[in-house]
Image (cartoon, rainbow, N blue to C red; front, side, top):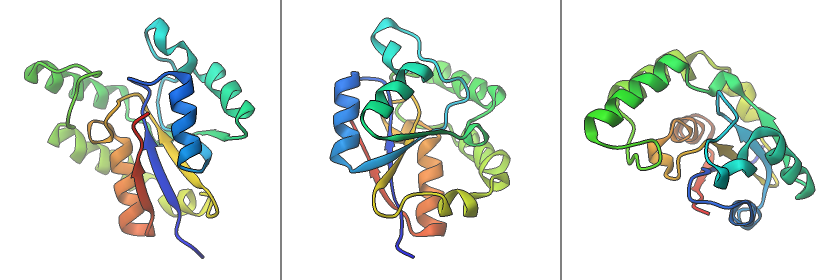
Length: 162
């Protein structure tokens, strides 16, 4: 079986048009939403709220799946917010994940998830994209999912910046 291509994409800094163009440019046929809460604050990001996003993706012939089991818990998000505050960063300006967040996300979420089944469910002729809100994948848990898929399942990873 060929190896999957996994893109990562965030909401911040994108419009619906640039978001969809980035997905099209990467040949994405499946968007995997890995957010716990599928809403985004701010009028400029209303398009990324679950039902609107699903409708736009359907119009673009892109399948949508929500994998809440890969979303960080509220406790983990709070841990990252405390580190952001300590560093004077916010979710929209974060550049890296806190080491403790990374460690706990891997231990509490990724190590417990059935990544073999998840990887097997990904398309092979087109790319899948992991979605969360942060613009930079390095500042988001989706990078940890992509790293695991690359290491254990040979996935080719693309970080999209609409």
